[in-house]
Length: 276
Length: 364
Image 1 (cartoon, chains in turn blue, purple):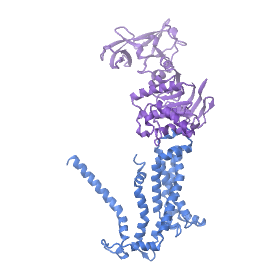
Image 2 (cartoon, each protein chain N blue to C red):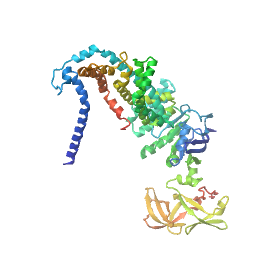
Image 3 (cartoon, rainbow over the protein chains, first blue to last red):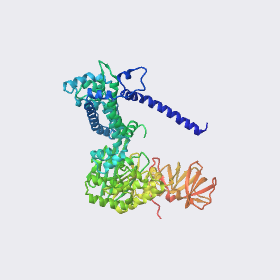
Image 4 (cartoon, rainbow over the protein chains, first blue to last red):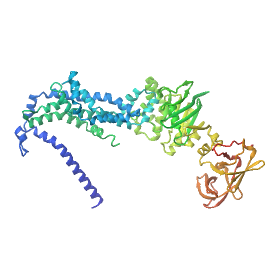
């Protein structure tokens, strides 16, 4: 084999491998999407029905049984609200940790990350009781607070690792030019890190959108986001796969579209720091 | 009267004493260069003056005001960084006007100042560009322009030319010298390049291990170094240092014994106690190759031809190599034995502590 042929074969094998993994990952979503157009009987038939006449009955039934707009609105408010709140806290925190680190900065960062290692269920009871006592059960406020705290470590870490890579001299130059710390953040750091901040925000929104543990335990109907709506289709009367799939498809749709538009930022956000 | 007065300035890092009591006074309009090997504290000193590092002792006074504890942004100093440190998200015009905008200068005045500075630095055509679209030399100009536009009390330069290629560096060095003449503003310049120090400075401050080794005009430092450190640091090629372990005291002269060769030095020229051993320092241009006789002999190891002159590296009997400046047209062959005449009047003597032995200059 010539060198050129070897290279072509290598590209082919890598491509095949990548496609296989991509398809395996995509398959559940594809299957969910297909199932949502089947009848309940077709949905559970074995072997699975591959050729069928698509129906929109599931979607109309989901629409009848649950208020999609209401849940979607809750999802939007909690995801965006908590992301904005997290950024407001994380930007100054990451800024000071990156540009004026103290002796314990590394420990603080590690400690923050360690909270992500604690299983959520471990703090379920205290948080539930706190929410109950403050009358926050089934409220969007509770979800926004919990989501903010849940994502804060990740948001701080991502911003920190980006800020750390900004050349220090640029801030020193600003300081010599007469900039106050506030000027430094607003006029130099923020404009320079719009990319990082938007990709961090995007990641946080996606994580909140998909969050189900806390939204299931802390909400019932008023504040229930889309994840809770999906779960309501797995009921004691049995599983309704087709309707469940329709609900899931509806819940995924907005974030998939949103993610599609922000693909570039998302990839950058997940990999920055790793590749410079 | 001193314009910038630094008194007993100290800087400690955790376990490291970076500045060990710096005393320095700079007059208005002076061009002062801090020079020294890496790690000598020159950048730390500059950054402490800038307020980017806090001092741990001593004081800094600028124009009669104590600025030791003042924030960098309020010191009215401008700094040019080695990495240029331009704001990447702003155009050249915005970079230049950033400080003025922060100071809430009126738009009309900003425009006028940016226009005049960009004209004087040939940046007019580049005002709408972002830093990443500029070459290294252009970026350097913008960084300098950003400092000039503010009309600060003192300019601070932190190795501003070390990222440029050799030709551009020489050109920018000239431009800086012209700029200083034109503006007449006090400038402090840090470099590790002694040629920059010699050519730009009114006064050079040589730092070593966190302390000032010597302060003086470039020629003073070249001709009358206080210590072996300064003597070796200033001048290219380096000063030759030849140990004379045995000294015979005669009536009115000292005879330095250098592995069989002798140099006679008038005893009355030495102030204070007569030393028992010295290190003889002599610059390459004060050694001459002679056909016979001479004070030293050696074998040519290598000749560097620079066109206008040549430097002969000559191995002496003790295996030490010294450098002799020779005429460019002199026929020299590798391995050839040569005789060297030492100009005794230009000798600089160092004692065992590497300090200079005081000598009364020979009368002409």
